[in-house]
Length: 114
Ligand code: F3S
Ligand code: F3S
Ligand code: ZN
Image 1 (cartoon, rainbow, N blue to C red):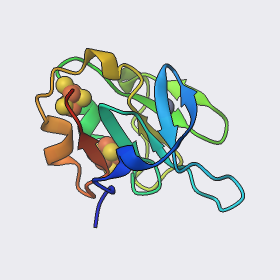
Image 2 (tube, helix red, strand yellow):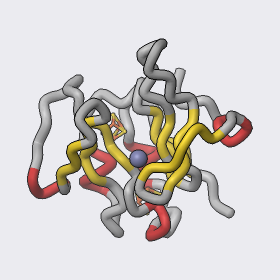
Image 3 (cartoon, rainbow, N blue to C red):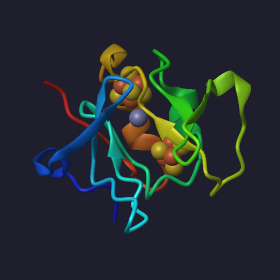
Image 4 (cartoon, helix red, strand yellow):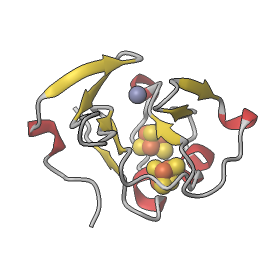
């Protein structure tokens, strides 16, 4: 199992850092999916960090969805399964190399070009 490939069909609940957020539901404890072109399912992300390392154009920041605190890749090496999630903060810079989608160990990322 991984991120729902049909995530774009779900309604947008808000925007964060100029990207869309879907499936977020605080009452149900769901962190939801951040991003449209570069979509990350925060409920699947285990803070692995390989996506931040392989992206050639530095699309991702670490985000703590509970406090909204953000850290650059160079500032943080979180423990696995921590509260830190890979936020596609600069998804507009994506060059669709697909490295993040193909290396995430839990298939939490889906890229949609166009
Ligand atoms: Fe980076 Fe993933 Fe795009 S690695 S360039 S965000 S496809
Ligand atoms: Fe999370 Fe997968 Fe990146 S687990 S930190 S989205 S490689
Ligand atoms: Zn976000």
